[in-house]
Image (tube, rainbow, N blue to C red; front, side, top):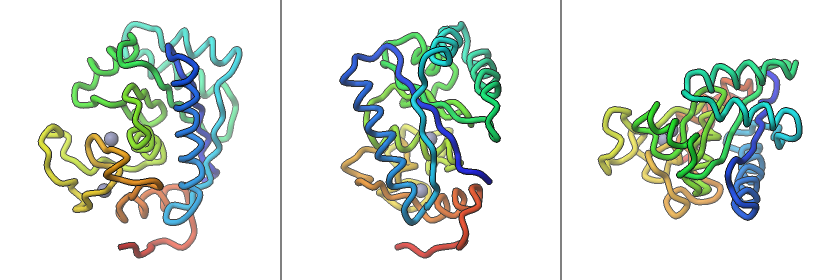
Amino acid sequence: MSAPIIYHMSMDLDSSHSQMAAAWVHRFAEFVALPPCEVACEFRAVESTLRQKLRDFLGKADMVSVSRDVLWTMSTLKLPDVPKLVVFCSAASDLAKKAKAAHPYALLGIPNGCLSVIYQHEPSVAWHELFHLLGAEDCYRRNSPHSQTEPTCGHKNCVMQYAPSLGLVGDPPFICEANVNHIRGLWGVAGGQRSED
Ligand SMILES: [Zn+2]
Ligand SMILES: [Zn+2]
């Protein structure tokens, strides 16, 4: 499979917050290209006409039509694969409220295959959502994410746990072997299984 293309933009954030969000995206691109994942992602900032179009769609009433219209807009870019989009917004924004209403357990950001809305601004939360866009799965039980139980993969420092933090997962963040193998398999990285501690 070709390298994933991930577009990123921020909405309703001041410039220092937008710059911070862009820096987390760039940091993700750096470490995900290295072992253990070794996926070379291409990140592009959303600009000009596309930005305006997406802003209009993201302002729509419900998450289902937001997702559908964003997917459609992205598909018009005529790239080999439908690209993925990550949107950073403020927790008080309408978009964040809609996302929370549609996915009550997703307190931090919602993964949607192609669209990720991030409204808690913590680098490891952004990385968790970006890993989802590459196919990673959550290491917590979706029906009881609030309990402070250990991540289901058994690794206390796994970035795919519920509500990760930089202090817990580190930089680069730890991601469990099951997710590494899943991501590598999905993106056709040669070498298959790797051992990690
Ligand atoms: Zn998740
Ligand atoms: Zn894990």
